[in-house]
Length: 388
Image 1 (cartoon, rainbow, N blue to C red):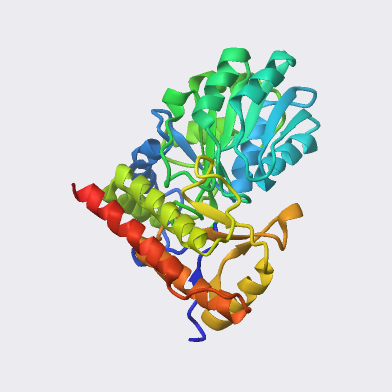
Image 2: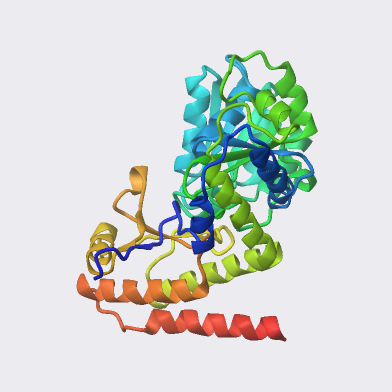
């Protein structure tokens, strides 16, 4: 293995396009200079289609978790009742943030690997009329589940007056989002996944309905006060010092996304998901999620006859290939492959091939190339259908 060669196939941080890396190496500029205002002015309209909104998307220096906390602290206050739909570790994180702010938090626990059921949400809301907000994850990174946030939004608005708030950190920029049309009140994401940037930027957009609540909410907040970000964004600025280098990179990443075209970006991620699933099903390695619940950005496998961490260790040692393990009660029981952002079908074929070697190295009796061939056939059939 080449000492400096690292192959990153975890569900974030994800690889960075060379042009984005070059953009981030530009000479520093003053964060209150006209150059920065012009940079933000160029970025603003390019973020809106990714969220599927006509509202402004605010940019915060912070991780995805900063975006989650921003969503909480601006919309609810201590004593308010909220519902958190938990389909994995990051739904649980939303609940923990709410609990830290002494918000009365109801947890709707879903079996890890399953998607949320709108009927369960409906039943809960019909018996809890005081719910002020419902929190959910779009893609649950820890399990590879894509939740039906469009149907969940409809359910929430049909059966309550609550805001519907969604964590889109591990999928926005890779899957369709129609914040306005679906009725999502707050939608958040981070820079280090499908947005093809390093960690360090958080993004959040709010509906007009949500802004009415935010403007009236007396919960104290300072750095994460959305009203500050909104008011400054009107002047193509930020209330606090932004990470200028990441903004340079963001402009280039958004340029790449829109040059490829959002429909094409979404289609590429769908194809990679199907290739990964086909490759491991060919080796009879169980997938954690059903086809219907599967995310186009991360896939989780739950092996029955070998240790997931043994496979991860040999891949890292032999090839510098990083894949993710499980979290919480799934730690050591699953492995996860990220396929989002700066990732292509060619990367998926490489990943499956290396994992086949890794499986052989840890003693699994498999036919080398069988999973790769399944992924190749799926790619060829997909390509032919696209041409036709």
